Image 1 (tube, one colour):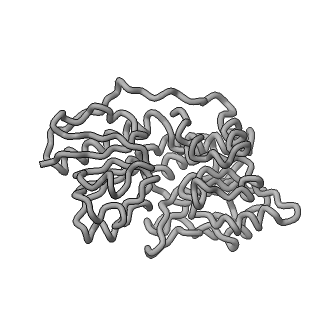
Image 2: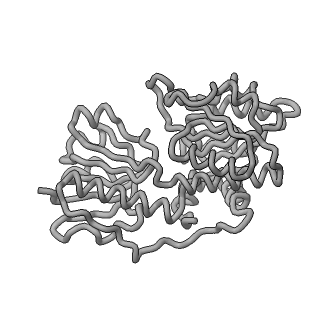
Image 3: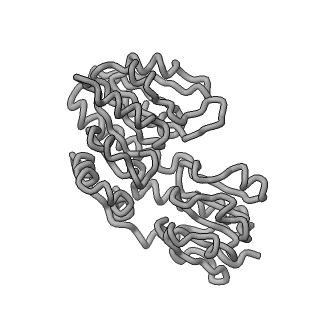
Length: 318
């Protein structure tokens, strides 16, 4: 019998949805600790909560749902050994990330239509980005070795006016993505290429990117939403990028709603409960989506990088 569930209070649409006999406790990521989860049967979390032995060793947790596409904050080996079932939300915010990429391209590449777009990762997000690019008449190049799709990263890097990354962050797989975009790849890019990272911070080697952007007469442009070591981001890189944001590419009401629905359904199925509905009465505030919104976000972050996490928490959904 399930008795207690810990829910990250930053996950919208879940307030009051569980039956009264289940004790639902809403906590901030900082409050989700080994002590507070000790009696919990299930967790609803986001990327700021590390799901590992340190957190769960003394707990009763059997189920973890992360309301995110990414899952590199989950120690999969530990969960498997401990018999803990976990789920993520693939594709939940794909359209929002696609909109972010479109805004970055239109901001930096203005009204250019004869662009070649190199898309690294052809999952839920990559497919939408490809469709958007095709609608605009761009030439599309794909690279997704795990799926056996497209060209090598080296090939598309050398041909692309825009190189955009949409992969998970992996270290030990057959095709690891940690520092996938490294010094060798950056040297292959066209001189005035735009590089976009709306995937995971570690996908780009930040030190290599700083070195490349520091070279004499470098014309590379960059739009960075995901950073290594968040929330303590690299201010040396921040100073050099064209567009900077605080990991909010996927933040939209539609995406958050879909993620909450996916988590809740998986929870109900795991514990053999009737399928519950999310609470659509609690709708977060809409954010700035007028033209130029990404520039305004970038200005915010560059003015106060030390407040990365606070800016992210307070960001209204688009």
